[in-house]
Image (cartoon, rainbow, N blue to C red; front, top):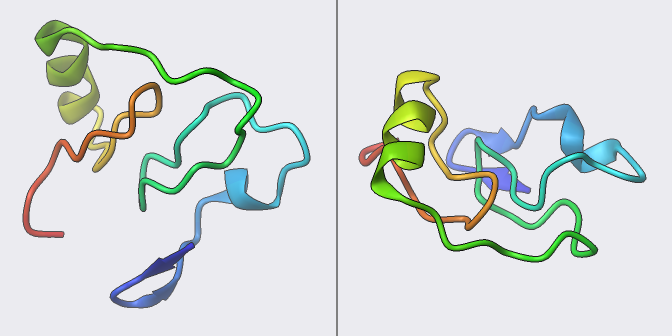
Length: 66
């Protein structure tokens, strides 16, 4: 839940039942009840266009340098 700038501001960290497994901003697991998935490159490309740093389904880092 920490980033280089401090605490991750994504609201999924505070939700009791987040709709995604991984935080799109820091990559930490926010809901371990959702199983991790194997994603396609097309899915990751769409997530990059949405400016997600991490994939919410598999946790892979999508954008480098943040």
